[in-house]
Structure formats: structure tokens, C-alpha cells
Image 1: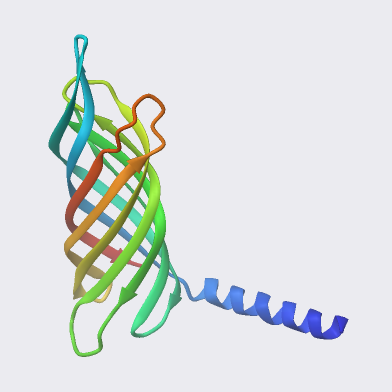
Image 2: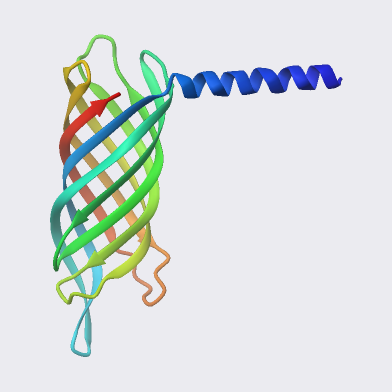
Amino acid sequence: MRRIAFSVFVLMVSFACAAVAHAQVSVYATWANARITDVPSTTGTTTQQQTYWASGIGGGVTVNILPLPVVSLGVDLRGSTRSGANGADTALGGLKLGVHPPALPLKLYIQGSVGYVGLRPASGVTNKYGAWEILGGVDYPLIHFVDFRVIEVGAGRTFLHTTTNNSPSLLTINTGLVLHF
């Protein structure tokens, strides 16, 4: 029984090492736009809900742990910043499922992420939240190791805010470049 258990363990470790050795890493930079709704904004003694658009830069890294010819599964870490009043900062991590149909020159993906978002309405006070977001996008290969991120659209909500009961929502629209290593 011990030999079988040890053999299964060795097989699992070998499979895990092979998967990590064949992992593909992608790094991306994006122009990041977000529509943020229901953010508490305090002016004097009045608190209002504010909705605004914020534009800035974003970026991240994806490590594909299961890079098959038609589908891939990866771990994605991303962040963005939109400076100033009516701004936002994000740091999210999650799983990304990619599909590369053999007949099309496009790479499609869907991703679920959780993490942190800091929202800065015009009042200048940063509201810090936990956040989740579902994203989907289309990449178009330019050359072997560079893709153009045609569009990435995401929607999500915030949670875990300590001072208010509201839950602002996020809509993101991004475009940029992806480098594969």
C-alpha cells in the first residue's frame, strides 16, 4: 500500500513540475477605463452617491499553468491606477481561461478575479474596498510574441467596506499590448 501511495505521489509531483516547466508567461500593459457607480462622496456634512469615469494605465502578468493548443488555464495578477480626483486604484488576482480557435486568428478569454480597489471621488477621500470582477476579452496576434488586446470588458462590485453599507459597481473597458515569453 505504501508503494502505491508513494508511486502516486511521485507521479503527481512529476506532473506538477512538468506543468510549471512548460508554463507560458504573458505580460501586458493597457489603457484602462472604468465607470464607477454609487461611490460615497462627502462634501461638508452631506454624503452623496457619485458616478464617474476614470481613465489611466493598467498592467499585469499571466502565467499559463495549462497551455494546451486550443485552450489554456492561467493565473492572472493585474493592477491599474487612475490618478487624481475621480480616480481609482486596483490590484486583482484570479483565474483566466483562454481559447484559441484553430480557424480564427483571435485569442478569446474569460477571467474571474478578486482583490482590492481604492476609489477616489471628487471629494478626495479614498474609499477602500474588496472587489470582484468578471472580465472577457479578445487578443489579436501581431507577431509571434506580441498580441494587440483589441478589447477587454469587465464588470464587478465592491465588498468589505467598513464605514458604509453601499457597494459601488465597476465597469472596465481596456485595450493594450500583450508580450509572451
